[in-house]
Image (cartoon, rainbow, N blue to C red):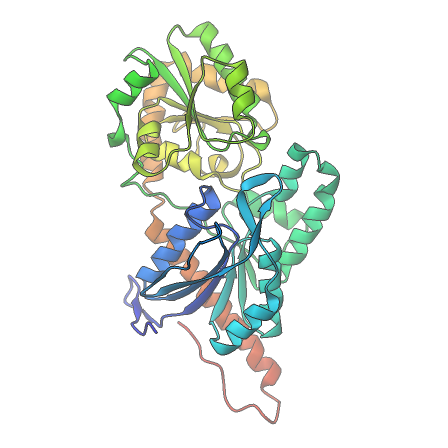
Length: 415
């Protein structure tokens, strides 16, 4: 077991925690939830905590990873019907009760709300373990894009029951906190997403990649990064590009990602550049080699791609929603469009294209904004939430048991 202490910046000593993390998605899955959770898990391990991660198998012969401060347990899973790149874990309540009875964690953190997450919540409640959750995906909003909009109310009801059963639910933005509070979600705490500015930065600009796109120094490259799927509002991205071609002689649109709309888009728009899935250095090059980032989605809980684009020095156009609403001051470090107003989005794109000075200024200021969101600070905030949850849970346990004749002492407290 890892026994070293974590020392905070102010010199306060905190003990290492045993944290059991339950998730339906984790690398090598390619999505914002998996990437963010991996960053936080690695940061917690670096800070001296022991992580036991429970996830579905990615493939038949998938094997668990073990290293100092980190080990995995793999459970069975099934593909998600409308998102076949991901799997949902099957219920494992009895197995988790056995596991956590044998090796009791200080806290259980549940990152996804699928069958595996629900069974983990029930197992943790059975063992009276403190629980934190993440609200990371707007499944109730996605339902309208997959012809199951009639399930939206039921999905929201389930999500509310799920998260309100936990001690705390972490959300990435104030906007989302307000939205969830208005429909009776409880115990919400804002923890934003982070960015690796060593990976995503303007220095990754690649003239060779631009040449591959057929772009010269005079070409404005519009970029989209994300899943090519209905919930991302790609028709508006394409519509904005078609409008841009009428006012700008040299312009390209590059779509980075894959998904169910790929074939349809390729067939209808042969002049669009489809780059496919990109990760790591290749993804960073694609960001930094473009000029504008056009992101029309309104189903994100955060939208990591917005922060990645800003860190890469792009002029971002997005709706006043999720990460963009928290990060962008319109006309200073990007351009915001009013929600659900396509014409405002197109006008924001046009404003950037028609004003080279505005494009240059927003690029510079976007990089400065992104520098304030280091992963180290996000991990520290997550860690603080865990300590608060554990202490509050212990205090409530003490209150319940303090008058019981079999009570032998007080629970431990964390600074």
